[in-house]
Amino acid sequence: MKRISLTATRSERADKFISAELSGEGISRSRVKNLMDDGQVTVNGTVRSASYALKPGDIIEIELPEPRKLDASPQDIKLDIVYEDEDVLVINKPRGLVVHPAVGNEDGTLVNAVLFHCKGSLSEINGVIRPGIVHRIDKDTTGLLVVAKNDKAHVCLADQLKDRSLSRTYYALVHENIKDDSGTVDAPLARSDADRRQMAVNYKAESAREAITDFWVLERFGDYTLVKCKLHTGRTHQIRVHMRFIHHPIVGDKTYGVKKEEFNLEGQLLHAGEIGFIHPGTGERVSFTAPLPEDFERVLEILRKRTK
Image 1 (cartoon, one colour):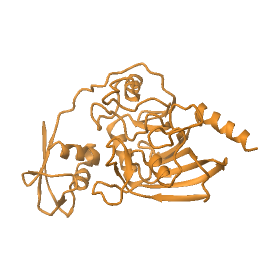
Image 2 (cartoon, helix red, strand yellow):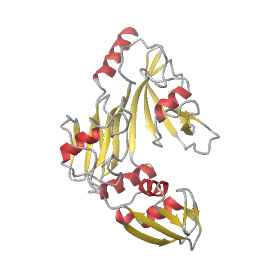
Image 3 (cartoon, helix red, strand yellow):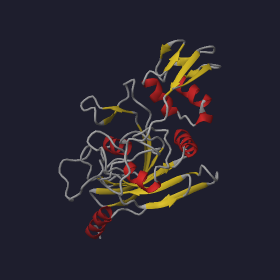
Image 4 (tube, helix red, strand yellow):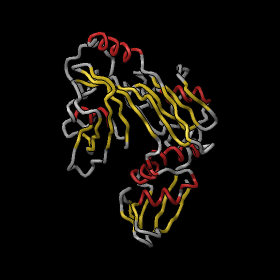
């Protein structure tokens, strides 16, 4: 167990101050929050939350657990690799593949596949269950995500997520005709009171977090609209909840969509088609694209023929 002592030099959120002070050790803000949630950080001898407001002179004690061997085991699962070098791995995730192990999905995940492919050479910042995982996309959402192969790359990419310079563009087919050619949904999200497994727009809950999605109409098909969406924030289920909030749920979405669908789909037609970021090694901006999956294209072909 490694112990670190810090003295607050300014008034600031605890997680923000600590992560800034420890950035040289590859410790991200999300990891600091996890440490604080686990009671491994004290301020003046008292366990505090990540949002605690520090005051100059506060004494911060941090206990860093020794790195643990990864519990997730390597599995030979085929990956669609768009790009790879010594720092990052860009993957086009298929529908149905869970990103990391969790209750009910202990193996057969993207993490298991990446561990096999990289022979265990991954960032350990997110712990034993999510090595290398900087951001996620839902099980039944397809498309691009970037994996960090070392801690330095992870910190760099995580910082870009925070300052929103890591850009993600999604394509979605939604119900009904969107009349405006473009728009912005600025609506905070929190866990749903009705079902804690779901997210919902909530302007009052203390736990609600800012969520902003821009969208542009690409094609209209009468009762359906193809849109491009760009995330300013990366909240759980953000695009899916925001599109339902404006009364245009995503086609095939079994959680936030309509009860009766005309297409035989295994999941929502939501695809992370573009990703861009500053490369952790070169400092240059890079971008990658992935084509729509076959089932998405099949539905679009049906709708285009119908609306000719």
